Length: 153
Image 1 (cartoon, rainbow, N blue to C red):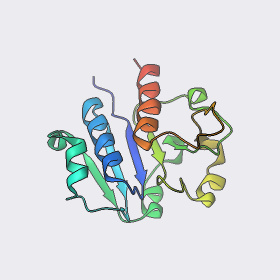
Image 2: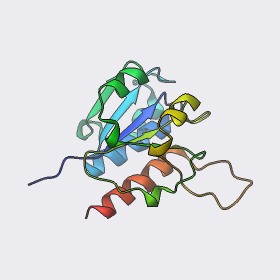
Image 3: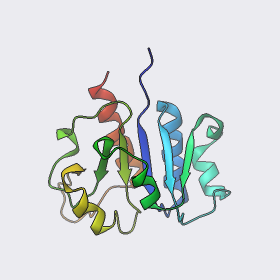
Image 4: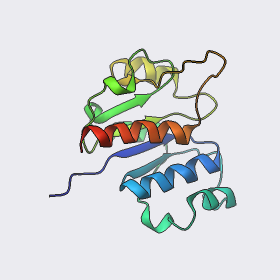
């Protein structure tokens, strides 16, 4: 029996190529992509489509009007919030198929009130060079998603 897919949630993404690359990642891994509005671009954007190449038909995308609507519809035990401000490493999380990996916007991350409310559900990717603030959103999504897949293979 096939396990339920993982979910990647992008909260108010701003950069079309990041979302396009993540959509391609989702297509390759049968992961559901959730986009929480407002988006910083049009879904007709050329860069978005170019980054996703010709794989868009293979990606299941769910749109949410706002973060509160997404959160209200979920079992919070299935949510994992990724933030450079979290104290726990993403490798310390036990992921299960059907879990949601939630990422914030590229410039500001997740809202502080969400990080406070779900502090026990937050994790980070370590950065060893203090001169680098963060890695690209598409890279971060891939790192965490493949750890979740690895744990369940």
